[in-house]
Image (cartoon, rainbow over all chains, first blue to last red; front, side, top):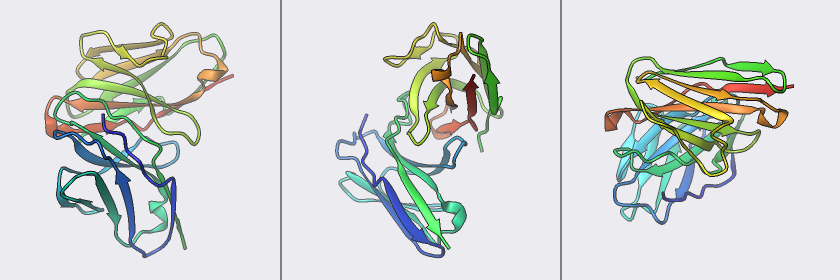
Length: 111
Length: 116
């Protein structure tokens, strides 16, 4: 499974756009990139998933360059409730590969 | 979307007793379920993978006789922590994967186990 590297923490203010980048240099051809959000004492919650280029949903965008060795989660206009840990995971969702969590990025949004 | 229900949300037990945690997929059939453990301020660590009707596969360093996993149906997996000790106190989270690729992985809300 591809190993991921993310910043340990990030700080932002309400209303700003936040971009969290994840490195996955040895991503495999069949691997997808998935981002999860976790609040304290809760299970991870799915945010977005993509394979290449750009994916957008109602809460976030995911940018993946052509070489797929990194990806950027973009959260538009964050609010205090976006304070959480964000995990980038890489794996083949079509198979039975397990999800291995890295250390994640602790995002702190301040007023 | 897919929902995974995990119970109890928190439990306190005495050292030496056993505790069972349930994980149910509510609106899909979960052919594969995963159990994670998370210590404070740390990431999730995979404990074991279970496929319906077969024995669970445990990660290195996880005692299979201590953490009993049963996945007897396509909607229910249970984790039993046997002879619990204070060092087993942790946040346990289950995850379920449906039998279709687009189902992805859905996580339960977690169980806070405190062994006193």
